[in-house]
Length: 138
Image (tube, rainbow, N blue to C red):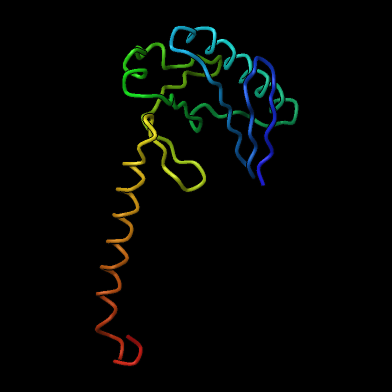
């Protein structure tokens, strides 16, 4: 069961088994204020990790901006990136979380394509194995 609570700057932090998710709702006009709030929260998480002998790996971290096509189009590439002291986090168009691939417009097109691809792969494998089974097993 995930644990969720609000931390500084009205940023919500949600913990899963070995994962941490930060989220913040904001208007496009307040993007810089929202980015500062997220950066402050990430800095707090980095301090927490460092205190416990851990490292927040920027290479394994993802930034995903969610919104309508019109809202996302208003953001420049520089607006979407978060510059951390340990590296820069570039925004991606989709992210996989708890087995579901979410895209920036919440259309789930990427997830549906991935599910279809996996189903087709498994059907193909069943077809290849079927000829080695007798009639009652099929």
